[in-house]
Figure 1 (cartoon, rainbow, N blue to C red):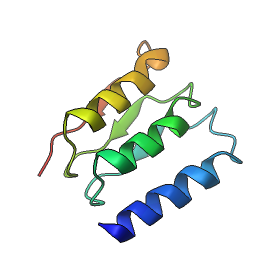
Figure 2 (cartoon, helix red, strand yellow; figure 1 turned 180 degrees about the horizontal axis):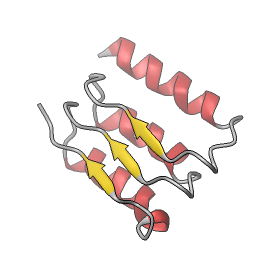
Figure 3 (cartoon, rainbow, N blue to C red; figure 1 turned 120 degrees about the vertical axis):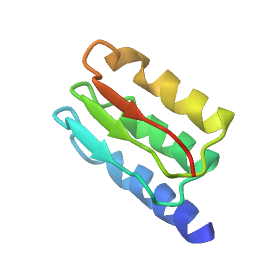
Length: 88
């Protein structure tokens, strides 16, 4: 879990410098992500305006993580076609 948290924090930090405006699909399934990591990544997801598919399945998400990602997806809800969040 510590490795997943470190990786998620590093990804979120790196995403600050990336142009994510054209990202259409993001698959983070089966990465051992938990609520804390998804909350960090939600900040980057908020900046993605063209996302059509987001896969967070097979992670260990609880209500806080699901709420964070749902809130992050609100600005792109019209373009979002697939959101997978079923847990293991």
